[in-house]
Figure 1 (spheres, one colour):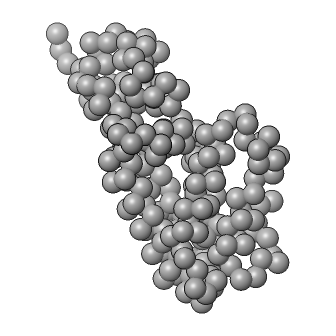
Figure 2 (cartoon, helix red, strand yellow):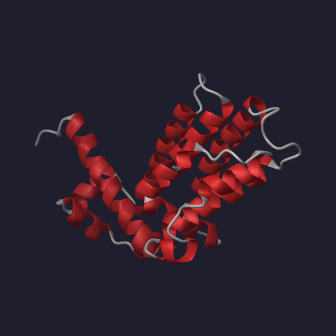
Length: 204
């Protein structure tokens, strides 16, 4: 039997990754079943294993793809051309939008952070730290003279980011816990900038 064309294989792989991300977020990497993931894509388990030979490989691919997409989105938002505050707001908006659109990633992140021996813990560490490094360097260099003096940039970044992730992972509870208005932009501006009298356009 002839092998399917590369474009077809990539399309199937992407659909498998989408279904796997939802399954891993809902059930965790241990309880999620490959047969169920395959069925949700409309293929059989052996076909899934053709693309991803083990559950561990599939889980690693899900996490890796998500962080590559996030890194690309943030890099684009940091592109020079506008003022630092405008680019800062773009980065923040890109992160919030990405997490809102990939709520399953937020739940996977929380699972891995809470699990002492989660299968994706090393993957998350390998992917999260470089993204934090890039954003921290952007703020430290491009925001010099604009951001609050003496600010612990990485700590402030993690405070804002963890709130976004937790709110997305909470799902329907998010509004009950945080209220109807997303406090992310106000919190970020309060933390990073000495003058918060002018709200970010992204808050509107």
